[in-house]
Image (cartoon, rainbow, N blue to C red; front, side):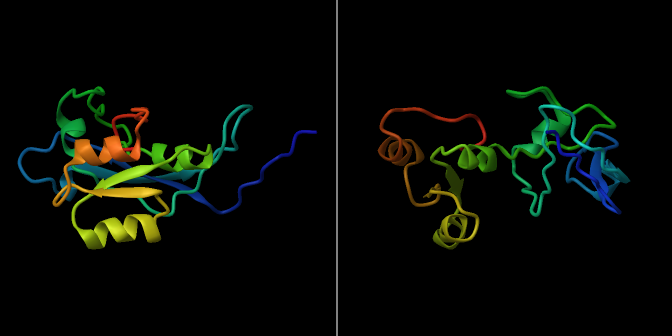
Length: 142
């Protein structure tokens, strides 16, 4: 039996890239939009984000091709949720952060299994200790 999800008075809120940032990023590089949330199709899920991460990697994604193609103008600025999905699927999730307080927060509040403090630890050495099978999850630190 297929359940129907009814979505009432909710909006899909998005920051769209309106121009390529030059120098410091400012709000003129983005356009805020709201649209109705569509019901998920077969094989899709609807996810409600409570927090968004603004990571240093997002800056080049707006301007140049990196290990992923740059964000096209008029498209949503990328924010990956791979760590959350990996955790749900039972994977060990590790986040790299700067400073003891941030690392403590990442584990205690954000729910990551481990955190590596890039300011005081050798990231490669610590990652090898935490993942001896060398099974890295991807480019975003999971």
